[in-house]
Amino acid sequence: MGDGVIPGLVKGLATTARSLTRHTHTAEYPDVSPALPPRSRGVIALTEENCTSCMLCARECPDWCIYIDSHKEEVPPATPGGRARQRNVLDRFAIDFSLCMYCGICIEVCPFDALHWSPEFEYAELDIRDLLHEKDRLGAWMATVPPPPALDPASAELAEVAAAAKPPRAAGARGTAAGATGAAGARPARATRVMPTVTPPEAGEPE
Ligand code: SF4
Ligand code: SF4
Image (cartoon, rainbow, N blue to C red; front, side, top):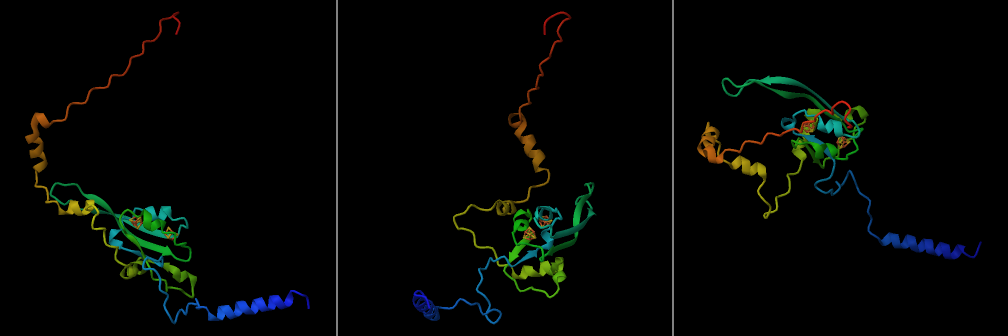
């Protein structure tokens, strides 16, 4: 035996003895659920009513694992004589969680708050194809999305809240207001832009 064996053995035994008295960090899952932060990235939930099939999330997803199908539908005019409008109707919205890398880009880019993080993570499957969640399953995850944190009491009122609190504008109010402003409130006519004219040089004259 070499000279360094005994000290090395003692050092190793001391390390083992020290770790015996330390608190264990082994998670007893699934017997004990882990205490995850409420905003953990577990699964993505969909609010179908908010989705306009704009395709932004599918285009920005780095893994190309969002599948959207939609068709256009004509909406009759709201008032007689109005113009019919077209809107997208969502036929399919699916996320393949076997490809998703949980980057959250789709949630960040959605302009209509249709996607949200849920901390739920217990959706392991025996067949990888079952990790493709269609819109019904994505919608069911919404029940597990935590409510947004309360606003700072000193923060400014949200533009959407202020707009919703405004009284509805009376019909024809715009025309009346414009008429009441009269010439004093009228916008000054924009000056006509004059383009410089270029005279072609005479024959024999240096350019
Ligand atoms: S979290 Fe990232 S990878 Fe997953 S679906 Fe969204 S954009 Fe794609
Ligand atoms: S970005 Fe939002 S609104 Fe647009 S398709 Fe995706 S989920 Fe729907």
